[in-house]
Length: 259
Image: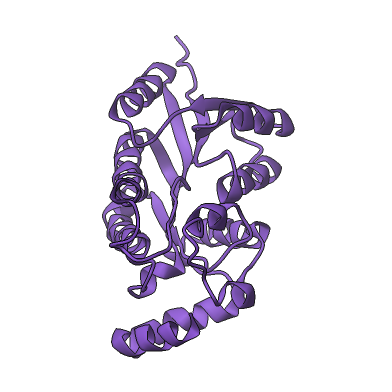
């Protein structure tokens, strides 16, 4: 009896806007051998609208990645569908700017839940279904390179994503699964609509901001080339190098003068 072929899929979290949405558009243009793209986010209307704009079959999955029972439902879906995951792209996340002791603690703990815990859990649950030469793309940030005043929790969560993902890459090499961590600077998305809602702004944003199309294009190329890190734009690449050679206390002082 001929064995039924597994469904080849890509999974994108945070797909309702920003970089997640752009990943869906670019995968749709270049990854024609996929059977389906799974689009995960909380906003159903946006997911449905996005799925209608794609040529590849797309499945909107309305899910809060921070809720345990919804993660369990997603795992059951993976088991039931008998899929081969060709690409996992973890874009779900958010940031808040402002003093740690002045921001709502619930919202700050929520950053830990979404940016760290949910990303880790989803990665763990998807690995058993990933195919040989599968790709994992993890969205970190240039904020991962150094602690950031008035961005303390967000920067710490992205530092976790960077460290975790680079170690995971080494562990998964023997399975021929390749992990690329994306560390962009400011991107033209809705991110800052939430991040700056308490009034604190990122002074260097206007000098270094890039379009999401550029970040995603570079990330997909770097993932294809099996690179560990994807950093978009010369200023942010320079910042990453400086963060390795200059004491963080000096960088924090300079960044404080810019705000």
